[in-house]
Length: 112
Length: 117
Image (tube, rainbow over all chains, first blue to last red; front, side, top):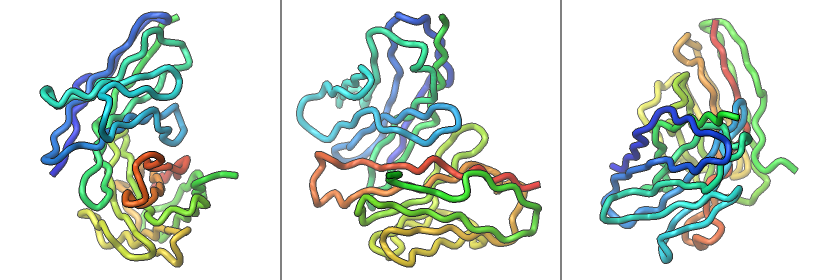
């Protein structure tokens, strides 16, 4: 069965600083990987996804993620964080039956 | 036009009651899902339906019964509500992967916050 680990429950960064959110996955086949963002009281919005090809994928809102098969990782990055990026971030892997399995999430706080 | 819409947005009810949450998608997707998000923000799949057929049924109490009258609707009925059912329930939809990966992804509704008192 697939699983996702997000080791950081909370992360605080200063506005304008760079950001990296960690994600490790476990899946027997080639993984399809996703990052979603959830703002307070809102649903989940897709930031980016990886299926195959270029291991560095670009997403919305200036986010990017890099797939590293050797490390079973799919870390999310942003060069300069804005106060509006404060939210909960979820990494997910797609398994059999189109089942999307999420990590436990990382809450991002941005200090002004 | 809202892609995936859930009603109601908030639901407060007493233990033992029966309630339903409705979900509709206008994306033409074939697969719909229900997820439960607990107080620690953990998201867990409950059910999925593909073109009205039950595909995924996780270890959910049988007090929860999904119903899909057509592929654009997936409702969730909960009998004999318990305090532990308090959570945010998300509906989502996706197209079939066989149609291609370029536009693949789950689209989520805005959630229904259920509070059982």
